[in-house]
Amino acid sequence: MNIIKIKITAFMLSCMFFAMPAHSRTITDMAGRTVSVPDKIERILPYDSKTSILLYPVAFDLMAAKAKLPGTKKYSFIAEEYNAMPQVDINSTEEVLAAAPLVVIAGVYESDGRFESFAKLERLTGIPVVVVDLSVDKLDRTYRFLGNLLGRESKAAVLIQFLDIIYKQTGSLIAENQGGEKRVYYCLGSTGLMTDPAGSKHTEVLDYLQMDNAAKIPVPSGGHATVNIEQILEWNPDYILAAGFRAERNAYQAITSSQRWATVNAVKNQRVYKVPSRPYGWLDHPPSVNRISGVIWLSGIFYRLPADIVKKQITDFYRLFYHYHLSEREYKALFE
Image (cartoon, rainbow, N blue to C red):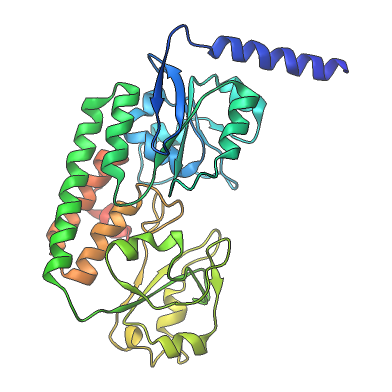
């Protein structure tokens, strides 16, 4: 073993020793896994970006860092303390150990038993990984679990109360508007020809709102599929939701000004909408608690939730979950 490897190994062992708790308890996480965690958890690390934004409103002061994303940028319409938080690459054992978390928390969409990457991280670092549920309709349970895990019951209770209002409201709106199902086409990127098909984990908000995803084609492994204009003309969606994708702008302008799209119902009836994306996308990217703002917004579009209620609830969401007070100008800017 060369001197560099010896130094790295010694560093890792010292970090592991530093992170070892004096007292521990055994819990069952939201994936049904048995995990040993410290009695008192004073330092945590999110596994990825979708878990970062989930943890922020309930435990920002316990976060050793936020997850590292390619193309690091400053996020708008979120508290500066989030932007100032350092980033850690979960794939770097050295960075994880240097952050010295007592627990790593990982958000997942479903408990399908495929948790080898979490087990590997535990083996390499000696740090327990706790799995929580990111399903858009179960976030109240997730915050209840996190409140109990981290001793943040009172902080979690405020978030849960807000989510319960949204869940009950959504259920009532759906029940009141049965029948007359409308087709929705969700596109990403600048051309409007990339979509997340029906059944994709990226369109869970549409499923939750019981809207018909027009793109009924096989779901690629990454979730995103490329289609052509002939398919879209055949689907003839009643609504089009256009979102940006990575460095690409959304396709709103391209769709609404093109003769190729002009006969689509959504275009003819002026039901093409830009999906807001600050600080994170309202329907996806990452698919985490940020999607609740999309649920509220689309309740206004699909189910005629009054605009003043939509505005108040989205403003409240930003205050509670992003620790940010939207001004009148900033609220309007979200939709520009």
